[in-house]
Length: 450
Image (cartoon, rainbow, N blue to C red; front, side, top):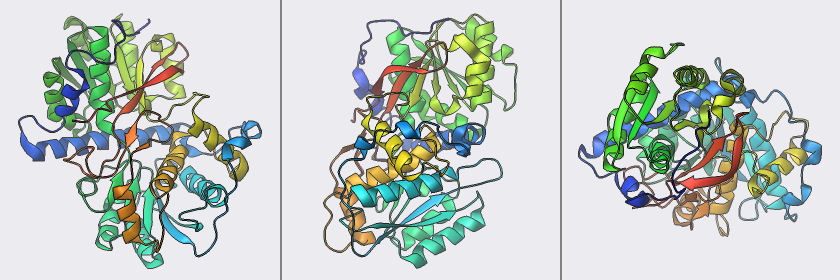
């Protein structure tokens, strides 16, 4: 069944995006509810990311098989760094009990070598990585914080790590800045001083279904959400207010974890009339939801997060995926994306024999954070310290989110005033075809500020 969005295809409905972004921080309920809900939404996404990383290519245990075809011209002109190294801490869960994110360690090493050979490192000086893996263990995370402080790193970077809650406070107290792809740590999100978070998960949680519903000309949004507080909290507070403010009726359908047959909940949705359905959960949760919708012959618009997409989803759901809308921050499959081409070339040059798959989003997070860091520190001069790095990032001009063209990133605390550490705004929208693959072109949505 084709779930292609109807309507004119306009990216702005009545009221435009300004109405949606305004709902992020201004409705009734006050500051505390909004901050709690934002953190809850982030936590839900991080949970799903871990699930995908443990079952998909996130293990990084195989090469891409395409390194020989990498476009070496994408590496650019050599500009070799020299002088006293700049120490950068790299935090990763690495190999944990339930998942394997050790690809991040190898990806960061490859990226640092590239920056040192082709981008002049940081301020002309070579990058020296201080890598530490938590294995998802808070005690090991505390050891990582100690290691970074004793090593006198100028900044710590990470993709998404469960141990950040333990690592962040000692780093903050030591005035060592942190740059993350994404985090669930509330104290970090509220930090105005030295924490910088690239990803905007609010766009995936709310802007995506609003956009799909608006273009499909339906007046109702239904969220099918795994019933854990970290996932449902956002929709019970801020999310509900955002949908109502944008002019949509909203229904939250909670499904217990592990429930394979969602027929009772799906029946409730179908009987409720025309609606957009937004699914939040890991890949097995999405499989159950989509198969339930297919069995009920649901023909309305559907949206999911890229975190629940997997080979298992494609195999289990089949052609019903055609027209499903997906939010992502990596423009997978876009051959015109210069960052994707460059990352593939970097892997070919520096990690060909090191089990790094350039299409793996868990590894790609390290390309994203290190490239963003290099761009934000472009032109830095003089002493390169934790303090000068923090000031340079805070004052850096807007850049584009690596691998996600059209998504603005600026770390001056203005993207989301209630969570000043968040730098990015927006997400990419794509549609799936009958084989579960992304269709081009991607569109940026949720990028407008208030």
